[in-house]
Length: 137
Image (cartoon, rainbow, N blue to C red; front, side):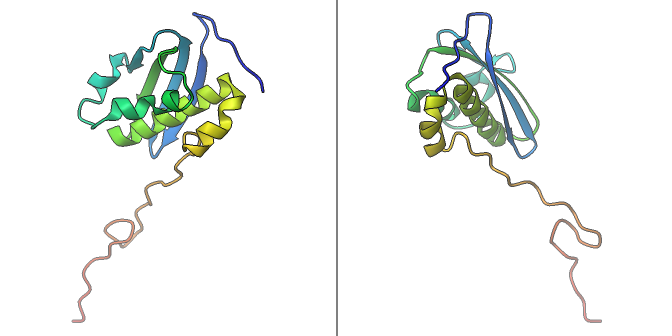
């Protein structure tokens, strides 16, 4: 039941990962600005459908809409994996801010890391599992 207060200059950080993506999310007290790699979220994820609404879901579920400025540094992977990593980082940062939000964040899946990774290529195969065509003669 620890509530952490943050000032205008201090922030709370959460790290989110998915596949090869790492997202460092920082929450500041503010008015709802959302910058990803120094770009507005709607510009950064212009090709991903409804990503802005998805990114706001942790705030909507915890009744913290427009209370924080969010600054994200994200690298690696594709856009969809980046969205998933940012959401995990947001969930972890909100949890650090207020432990009482844990049941809500857990129930909605904002604290669960997706452990699936790309399987490595094996020798003698074309990929992780695909084998060359077999010929009897």
